[in-house]
Image 1 (cartoon, each protein chain N blue to C red):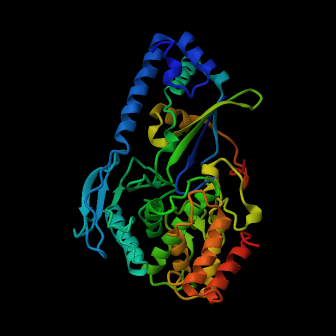
Image 2 (image 1 turned 135 degrees about the horizontal axis):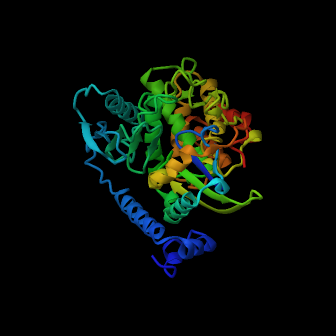
Image 3 (image 1 turned 90 degrees about the vertical axis):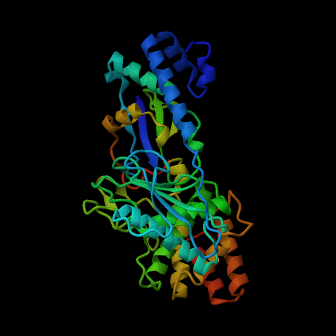
Length: 347
Length: 103
C-alpha cells in the first residue's frame, strides 16, 4: 500500500488521517491494514451468495428449510430439517420450523398468500448463528437467529411472533419495499410487528381481549426487568431495566422521536402505528386477523404504498382500503379512522 | 477520542446502544497505531446491505470540543474482530433515561 493509492482505496477516510497513516505509520501497520482489507473483502464476497433452494409449486403448502450455523457466523449453514421431516430434538431448530409453518398458515389461510412472494418462495432459517449472538434478523433472503447470551436474552426462536416478524420483512420486501429509515422504516417495522402478533394470535386462536399484544414475550431472561421487546397496546412500557434502559417507544405523534440513531428511529417510532392497529382491532373485537388484519394486509399490498410513505400516507390508505372492503360507513372504516386520530396521525 | 456504538437489531435498547469511548490521550503509541490501522481497514458503504433488524457499528472520531471530525458506519458482520474487542473494553457513557434515542 502506498500513499498514492490510499485515497482511491479508502475514500471514506478523512484526508488528514490517510496522510498520517501513509506517512507516519510503520511498515508493519500498513501491512496489517492491507491484510485486514483483504479479509474483509473476501467476507463481503461470501455474503449475499446464498442461492435459494426450490420453493413450493403447490399453493397451500410451504417449503421450509432450517439450517444450523453451529455457532459460526456463516450462512446458510448446515441443512438440519426440511419440509416434512420430523422433530429434530433441538429446540431452536424445531421452533424455527414450526414458526415458519405458523407464519405460512396465517398468510395462506387468511390472506391466500402463497409464501413471501405469493409464488411459493422457499422459507429459509438459520439457527445457532454465532456464539451467544443476541439478535435475529432478515438478511434479504432468509431469517437468522442467535442463541442469545443467556444473561439478558434467551434464544430468539422462542417467540413465534419474532419468527413471523422476520418473515414479514420478506413479504414487505416483495411488496412496497418500504425504505428502512425514518417513518417509512417505522412502518416497515410496525407491519412486521402487526403480522408477527397476528401469527401468534391466530396460532393461539385468541380473541383481541385474550391477546397480550406484546412483541417478543419470552425473549428476556428472568434477570431483565421487562415483559417483552415492545408493547403494541402501551408503547413505552415494555421494559425499564438498568442494563437495557427504558423502552423508548412513543404512542402518539406529539412524542415522535427525531433521531439519526436506529436508522432514524425505525424501532422507536413504530410504536405509533402499532398502537393504531391495536386500537382499531380492540374497537372491532373478535379476531384481529379477520377485519383489522385485512385492512392492514390490503394496505401492505396496495400499489399506492410507496417506498418512502409516511404515517399519514399509510393511514390514508388504510382508510381507503377499509372503505373498499367493508364499506365507507362501516364499523371497520370508522374504527380505523378513530384509531389514527387517537394517535395523532390524522386530524 | 474514538466513540464506538452498536446500534440496530430487533429492537432499540437505549442502554445497549450507549456510545463507548476510547480516550486517545490514555493510549500507548502501539495502541494508537492499532486504532489507526483499524480505521484504515474499515469496510466502506457496507451499511447498505440488504435486510432488516441487522446490527451495525458507528465509529466516530470526536475532537476535544465534542465535534465529530469523522464518522463511519459498519455492518456488524463486516466489522473487524479487533474493533469489537475495543468496543467491549471501552468506557461506557452514562445512561440517560428516555433521551438516549433522541438526536
